Image (spheres, rainbow, N blue to C red):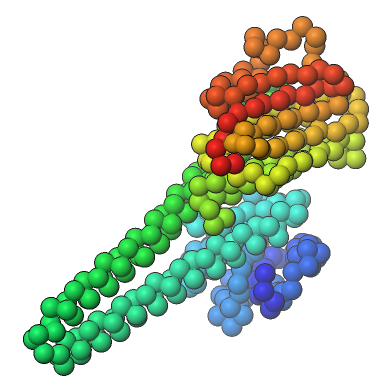
Length: 383
C-alpha cells in the first residue's frame, strides 16, 4: 500500500484503538490515523481528514457502527468501512455486509485486520481506476465526434463516403475494446458476488450451529463450512488475479491449509505442513474438485493423524508434467487401519474424495507405509 494512508478509527476504548494501530504498524504499513468516538467527531473527520479506510466498533455509548455506515454511504460511498468489534455476531455480520460494509474483523483476531484493509483498498482502487478509464473513454469519444463533425464540414462530397467508412470502422473498434472490457468486469463481478454469497452461507451455517448441542452435529456444520470456504477461496483468487479462468494451485493450497489450521486451532509447534509444487495453473472446473479433495484429506489428517498431542507433519506435493497432474497428500501420523478399502469407505469425507477423483477422470491410491499418503492422478491439458 502507498504511503500516507489515512485511517479513521471509530472507537471509544482508547486501549482497543491502540491495539488496532499497533497491529497495523506491526505489519509495516505506513499510515496516519485519527480516533473519534462521537457522531459529531465522526462526521467532521470524514470532511476534514478524508480517510482512505474507516474502522468502526459495533457500538459506542453515544453512537453505533451501523449509523456510521449509513453516514459514510451518504457522504463518501466509495470509502471502505470495516467493522472491528468483539461483540459482533454472525447474524449481524451478514446484515452489515448486505448494507454495504466491506468486511468485519474480531478484536480477538486482529491478525486478519491488515489483509482485510489491503483487500478493501485494492477493490476501491480497481473501482476508481475503472471509473477513470470510463471517463477517459467517454471524453475521447466526445472529442473524436467533434473532430469528425468538423472534418466532415470541411471535406467535399467526393470524400464523404470515405469519411463515413472510417467513422464506422472506428465505432466498431471502440464497441469491440469496450465489449471486452465489459466482459472482464462482468466476470470479476460474478466471481466477487459468488465469493460473497458463499461467505454468507458459511456465516449462516455458523449461526445455525450455535443452536445445536450435539457435538457430532456441530462437527458436521464445521466440516460443511470448510467445504464452502474452500470453494469461496477459488472465486476470491480468480477475482484478485488478472486471469479470470485459472488459478495457481500451490498459492491456493497454501492459503486453504492455513485457514484449516486456524479453524481447527492446530498447535503449529507440534504439527506443521509443507507444500512442494511447480507453477501449476488449473481451470476453475478442475480447481474446485481439487480444492475440495485437499480440504477433506488435510482435515482428516488434522483430526485423526496426531492424537494425544503427537507431533508430525502434513505434506502436500503437487506436480504437473506432460498434461498429467499428480497430487499427493501425506502425513506421518498414526495411519489408516490395515483393513480399510479406499473403494469401499463409509465416511462422507472419503466418499467425497473418491467421487471427486472420478469427476476428474482420475485415479486414487493409498499408501500406509510410514503414516498415510493419498496419490491422486488426473489429466489436465496445459497445466
